Image 1 (spheres, rainbow, N blue to C red):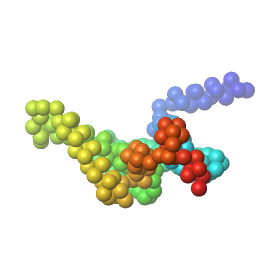
Image 2: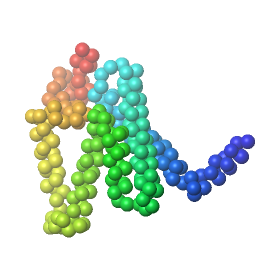
Image 3: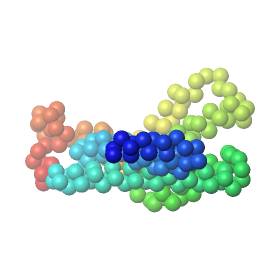
Image 4: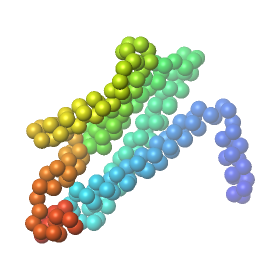
Length: 209
């Protein structure tokens, strides 16, 4: 029975006429898996480093963040691939605009909600986009090829600006970045004895108040 079922499923997967819907379904699956893989360890580290509360509350926060990221990415991939396929079917060919429009709709529907997870994902992508557009501008001749590697200047400006914002306008930074920078630059100014100087970031007494 199981062998017959597997044969039927595998035969179905080989059918060219089902390739588009199957690709959309697998995209949904891959989005869910990838979202969980990258969010779970990040949520685990950030929660246990910076979040207070009971173990149960921390685990719930990790599961919620992982589920949200996994669901959103799965839904976006499903929407993007589905709209791409629809446009190609309607116009009879694949165009560059199809990718842009499908992603715009998916971004609006899935990642348009202003929450911490979507904010992190969108800002992560923005940095990659700016890098890619800079390279594309050079490739297309819009911007002349730099005579020297611009990366040192880029790093200088990035770190100068982010620390200036953190020290004088911290409310403008994303909450998880604020937490990380507080840990690095402000918490390191405070200690009471060897325990919260080397072993812990904060004294056990202060942490439980």
